[in-house]
Image (cartoon, rainbow, N blue to C red; front, side):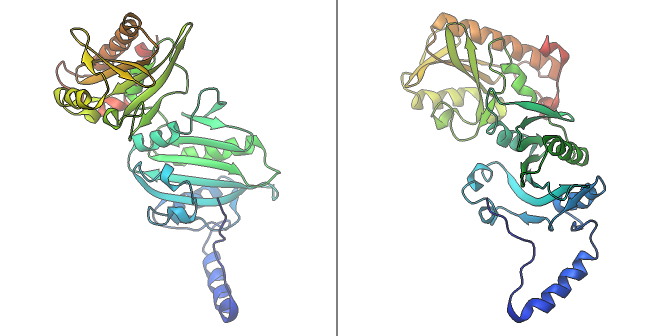
Length: 331
């Protein structure tokens, strides 16, 4: 990433540029630009929480995102990216500490989760930023809330982790929405699922585009390591058509029981069952019996999910089902 200053002047335009700069600065609070719309309007409100900007916030859209994060733009653009707002902030009373704040705004809450999930890996240290899980280190903090994915980076050596977490919390208070994972991810939370391994893929799952979009999670128990797959009705479309597509695309795809299908993938054996328009899968070096046992547990979670979210047999639940979270699913 590179840092671009908010104002640059050259040659005979210096005096005019300086005058404009002073005029604009006079309308700002603690050096923060005031704007009527967009996430730049959050920065003056952070000033009210004792954060001082070292330069005006800058915004980038889909057409010029590469100018700010060249080489990383493709990590965001496919997921409903709308706007990036970037600013540099210092905590009150500490002129040596500086943080870079990046606010990525996406079209939907799931888009923001997708971006976060692709930064999240098992074993990372996490903390809480109000109601959001956050990936944290001594120099970085990442979380998502509503339609925003947020990155905070230490921009000087004199930063403290406590200040960085406070900046995340102060920003979270100003953001709408929650940091809840999509509700359907609870279906995959069976004993043995590896914490922090749920990822949503839009392009390919297990190397096959025909399986995407959908969720993937790691599963590890003594003697077994596998990948769990969840594809929702909204992502798969009508089940008969989806299964026909798999039949024509996955190697060795065949029915192996009343409701189970199998495919022989390079990475391992893939087993799949379909329930109420959802497709549940497990892939790895697993026997049919082991796969059946794993999928039965996921299917039980699915039944509970549909019961709690109001889904009716034979048709998927309503559009609000992703936002529901239930105590029974955590028992």
